[in-house]
Image 1 (cartoon, helix red, strand yellow):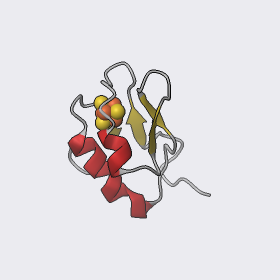
Image 2 (tube, rainbow, N blue to C red):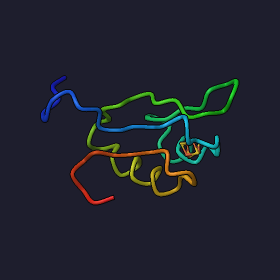
Image 3 (cartoon, rainbow, N blue to C red):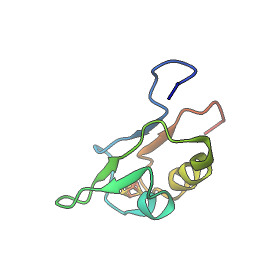
Length: 76
Ligand code: SF4
């Protein structure tokens, strides 16, 4: 699998600001999960396929704490 644009992480999920609302998991279960113990976000795939990016954008939109960042060249 190639990653044009270099090794930069495309999706970030910051557990330090996550409030465990789980909205990201509902929107993009292929990319996000929640820790079984503390409920905080876990990033499953930092470089999701292009087909999943709309779901990632939806997750970012739904996240109440702004924990999700997507570096895809579009405005936030
Ligand atoms: S939607 Fe945001 S606050 Fe909720 S679990 Fe996901 S990253 Fe955390």
